[in-house]
Length: 354
Ligand SMILES: NC(=O)c1ccc[n+]([C@@H]2O[C@H](COP(=O)([O-])OP(=O)(O)OC[C@H]3O[C@@H](n4cnc5c(N)ncnc54)[C@H](OP(=O)(O)O)[C@@H]3O)[C@@H](O)[C@H]2O)c1
Image (cartoon, rainbow, N blue to C red):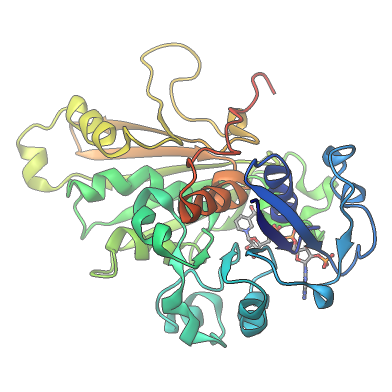
């Protein structure tokens, strides 16, 4: 029997991407897709790529019926307001917002500028990054989605921190270049086409909210790694590219660590990962990860370089923010929660050229 799922906030970009993936998922039946502004209209009126793929119509949140799994794709702050209502509707929840990503309630005040209104729910959610928390996700009923800029940074750096190669006191400096769909479907002054098109705009040079998730993952709750993140808006709709700088531990630098040693660490960490591809070619055009070719795919491409003189490692990662950075990761988590093959419904490799 198929698992009955509903999507809350289905008219948005992340919700639309969930819908696209779940319509083709062999183990899933979509029960309801909510939107307050499109209630009663066909989902393809908002997501034209789904025309002739489904006759589902948007429902209002107030008519949500019991189902097996709820995906929440609401703006930040909405899931925490309604969590008691949502858990009455479904025994399993995957929330794509930031509402249940951070373990410490005080971090919401620090990074989001407000108090968490349902802090008792924070320990019940598992952070939905399969490459780091797969076992916890498999046992969880409540999974939080991931921040896209955090995911692309965490996946770039995780092997180096796991292998204890990094000078933790010097920490991480990371620049993330981000496509416009990260901002969601609601238009604002900065997304108006004449003002956004062709822009390369420093969006959050300091204190980007996703920094908190990188500190949480790399420090594993045991230490506070200094993480300095800057985010720049670039001319892409989908995609995020992280360029992260870290320094080798002095001892390893003195020992004369080689590039092949770094290869080994990345390979060992990620060789079994279905959605991680190592990208570092000596020649050709595509020598390092690029987000463009990942549009619509759940892959994260990871590369690196090493400067033996200074001991600096540059870790580079690319994802589609709406896929590995949101809906794709959420479906991957669902597959893990139900014990299905992790790649089910997520096989699309992306397009080239695009
Ligand atoms: N965009 C990304 O790259 C990305 C990546 C990772 C995570 N996320 C997270 O995923 C969530 C959704 O992001 P998005 O980019 O899809 O945003 P979005 O395009 O703005 O969509 C938001 C959805 O929520 C609904 N909504 C808005 N206000 C609501 C309210 N007060 N009550 C009920 N429904 C409401 C909207 O539809 P109606 O107004 O029609 O109801 C829409 O369906 C966010 O929390 C975001 O942080 C996004």
